[in-house]
Structure formats: C-alpha cells, structure tokens
Length: 330
Figure: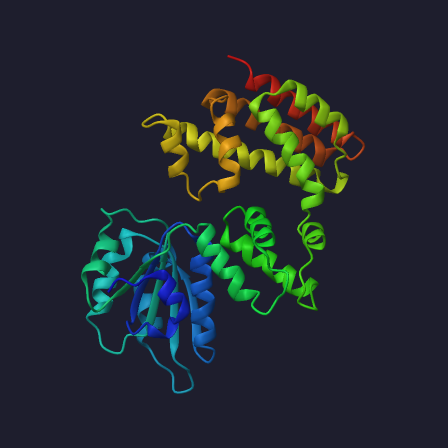
C-alpha cells in the first residue's frame, strides 16, 4: 500500500503493515518518521541495523528477529541504507508468522527499483516516498511547531525558511532554538535575525553572490565595507562551498537540458528568492572553473585551520576576489 507522506505525518498510528519502506532524498522527513515510530513504541526494544551488517550474517539476523525471551518486550527493527540487495530477505520474512515490525529506510529509489516495485504492488506491505520539501511544506511545519506564537508574520516565516535552505533537519534545529529563545512566545524580527545569525551573514551573502556573478565593482566595495566575524571563518567557507557544489550540480544537469530546466531539477530546490541570482551565477561558471575554486576553497580552509596567526579574514576576502576574477574568465 502506498501512503502519502503528509497524511502519515499526521497519523503514524495508521501503519498496520509489519514491513514498511520509507524512501527518498528527504533525510529530515525520514528522521521525523523514525522519531515518531520510537515515540509510539516507547516500551519496545528498538533495533537499529544497517543492511550490510544484516546481509553479512543473515542467520544472526533471523535469530534476532524471531527468537523471543519471556522477559523481552516487543521488538521494532529499523534497517538503514536499504536497496534492492535486501529484497530476497524481505520476501523470506514476509511469508513467516509473528514477524516483528520492520521499517526500512532507503535513499531515492527510481521506478526500476525492484525493492520499490515489490512494496508498491503488495497490499500487505507499506511504502511512502519522502520527496524534497518546498516552501509550502516547511511553512506548514513552522506553523504547527510554533502554534500559539505571536509575531509569526509572513516576513518572519520567510526568514526562517530562507535560513534553513529548504532543509527540514536544519529547520527543526532552528525551530528548537526559536522555542528556547522566545520564552514569552512573541517573535521579534530583529531578535529573530540575531538568533539565526542573519545580521552577521546578510552582508557576507551579498558579497559572496556578487563575487560569483563576477561583478568587480560591487565585490570590491563590499570587500572594503564588510567586517567578517573571526569566529565564523569556517562557516563562511562552507557557505561558499555549498553554493559552488550547487553550481556544479546544475552545470552537470544542464548538459542534457536548458539551464532553466536544470535549475528546476535540483534537489533540494533553490529557494525562490535565490533563483534570479543563482541563474546569473550559473551562466558564469563551467565545470572546470568550479573545480578550480573548490580546490582553492579547500586549501584556504586548511590554511585557516593550521595557522592561527594568519589573517583569516584576508584569506577569505582573497578567495572572493579570485572567485570574482575567475567568474569573468573565458
């Protein structure tokens, strides 16, 4: 039976099947389901296993699965990193009586996957796709977890969503911070930006973006005007690195389609406010140039971590100048 993820989120108790598969690229959603299963089965013995260790010793796994102790509560098995290799084992288990509940967690399985097809076609097994979140699904999470808060305006919701980069795991972390910080349940925009480090990050984000589109005039002005926080130097490098990897991903996809179509295929998707600047950047970069700067970013990080006496802020600004120059290179 195929479940809808949003319905299952609202009622995890609706799972009746003993064998259930969660698959897809949304790690945060799969972790949420994992947590809900654990909370629902607080008295159960939870077994966390990886597919490879199970396949390495199937007899040991079957003993764990079916051997019962008088003093043992019910068992729940969570099997991680599953793929088509485990299908034969699942078929053997399915035919046995008194099977404990087994939840499988997989990465994205395409339509040709034997494991996915087997679960989808069976009315005795359960399966739910965990696809990437979008602004709508994350807004729903925010409104649910911050229910009862005042000051939850569209502006503040967008600030939270933009800061998490459409990443559910990061969103959950940020919501925990917000819940702890705003004890009076009144969200102030300036305090929210400070809590999420946006005031520090806004000027750097602008600098990074202008460097990547190769705007020398704006980049030079921002380099002179921007004060970098010495405690955030590795964070700054991670921001640059993540954007470069996104550009590398879209450049590879664009080999087989238009750039606009390629941008639309990125998972997780680019936040809507970032799409115009990201599109400009993507038109400036190719695979070879991106790899050059990724290597330079890595070397800069090594220098920062290995030498505390060096002017780390200058190293990062030099990297941004190099990025700006290379963006304009043919």
